[in-house]
Image (cartoon, rainbow, N blue to C red; front, side, top):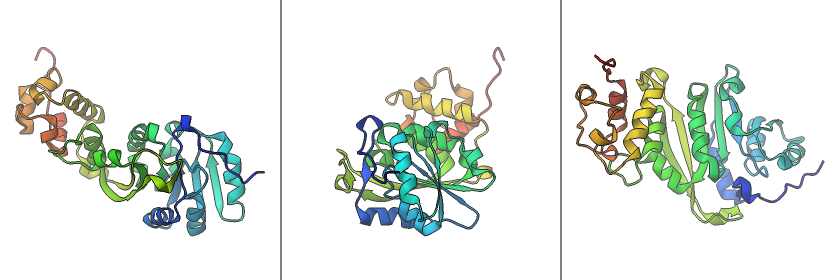
Length: 265
């Protein structure tokens, strides 16, 4: 079995990390407790995989590119217990994978599907103890942004509602092969205790946030026309004259939770 990994595939958005100093910082950022399961998304050529395996002894990886599966297995031989899930990560049930034990996710996420992966992980947040991901820096900036920021939007509100978002450090293009055109950054996401989140209906919350940021220049009164009425704004204590980027996560939760009149009521 070959231990030589194939070159990056542009079609899959692959940029493989090779700079040892940044690899070590990512490995150090992952703190596994006894009884937890470590899962890496998109191991690629194994730059993070092998150091994680040496440190923790066991690791599950999710890899979509079949050409990387054989080399990963060969490289891991004698290093530790590597389980390979050869699937599209968006089709992986993290809750089932956890099998009752908390999991920690780590990975250099493919830039072309990073947001869908984040939202997919949110769906399984109750089974996830922590996520340490590398993404484009501008995505991390959006994830961590607060009200008033130009990059505050749907992604940040949705993630911050369920997780603490902690940007850790920036990784320059030269740390990758091939170098991407932009800076990357590593971020830690810690899912909140479900009892403290306070969202009554996930679907309703997502609908309100999506509509509010769908027309950023409009006031919430106009952007949420047909989604929230005067009684919801009043119940939530939110000004309908504000714009989406001016209100915090708690205000969006209050709007989504505000009782709605029954049709014809």
